[in-house]
Image (cartoon, rainbow, N blue to C red):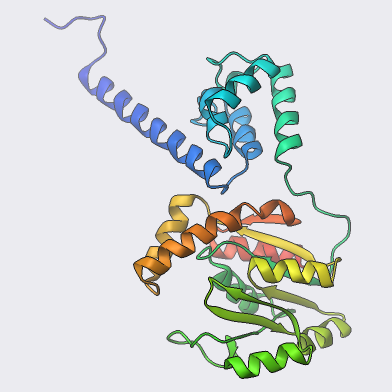
Length: 298
């Protein structure tokens, strides 16, 4: 005889699947914070906007220990300092606790703050395999008013790449000459392998004509541009999640296992630099991300 107090078997199975999915999503969110794909503040915003979501259901203890450099001891001292119970969930924080936690996060891990005004010199950077080139190509095709800079590089062409269109492919001697004669706005060695640089002349001509120039470069280059042209607008392209970034790198199939591992280590370091940028754009859809970058470039 069926116990009327027990839910039907099918309901229990569905509830179990939902619970497993929610735990998996919370685990992915914690990984994204740990890998700096999203900031702690962004996860807190998601939790407070929807307390019933996996983010909202995350315990404060899980949240804090997902942040790099916070272990259990540091976690407990933070909870004591902010007078937050360890059994609290993010979505259930009180009004004062929300304010105090956000202030604590902002003081120790400040998010980037857009500066006033926009520059016609725009830099697009981000971690390896995030899709910078694909987004930049979409902008070039659909926003012809924006000039996409062509970089010089010492690496060999990949299948389908055309010299002068995708890159200027040069040897080390020519790259040395470009540096020596001041013909590069920025240059860097990427992944301890090949050198990349932005020819200065075409950029200066575009800006002199009152047009917008977009540079799709790496983190080192972005820092050099900011140092040389402090008014430049810096945009950081983010993956939707760490797992998605890994899948994109593996799916690209252009690197071996050792190279992929090195690039993933580099990506973790690059993601940690996003606070240096004026704007952050998530590349969850190429067309949408490209349009958002284009709007920032106007």
